[in-house]
Image (cartoon, rainbow, N blue to C red; front, side, top):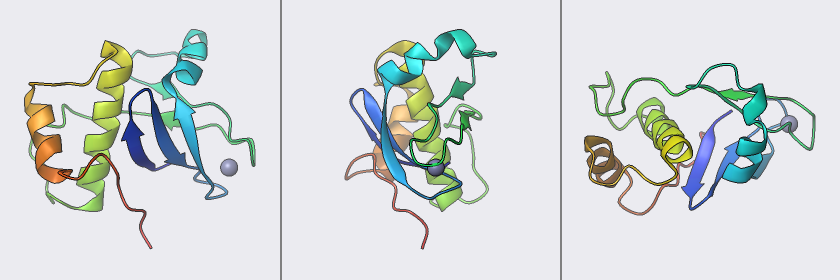
Length: 116
Ligand SMILES: [Zn+2]
């Protein structure tokens, strides 16, 4: 399910089953809104390649302590939390502790290299 990139109005995600990377727009997510069961979960559109459907689940505020700062898991959580903030708020979390954390770990932009 990893999110690999976050951009204005869309993000990139890798399918957990077939490993294909694709772009998902916030609009596509919004269209699935009726099917959302909880506010904090986001149903992703089915993978065009294999049809698998995944759910994005933000955890924590992103500003709290992570056991391994800078690790893949930590950076991925930051991306997921920022994504959820943007979807819910319609804009980025500018000015928040979460934003500071993002700037610290993603100085070159919100792109997360996939694990080898
Ligand atoms: Zn797939």
